[in-house]
Image (cartoon, rainbow, N blue to C red; front, top):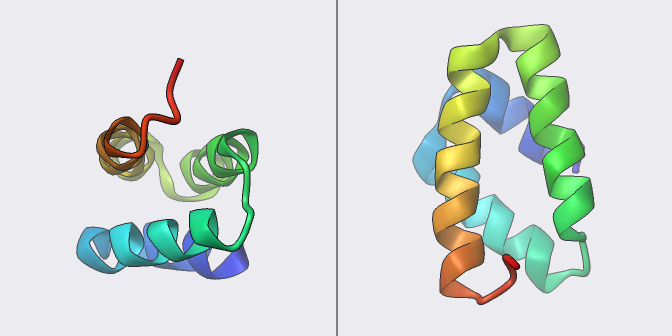
Length: 67
């Protein structure tokens, strides 16, 4: 989860997507992903967190994890 926050903070969205899939495969919940993105927004700014949300939404929709 810390790795996701750091990669998001760096704005490396391709790597962020890869690690997001890995985190989901290892049991990180959607709520925990949301919290990670909020932390990125607080410490690194809203534009970076919005990009993380965009990538996360696409991944979660592909996995049918959004309700």
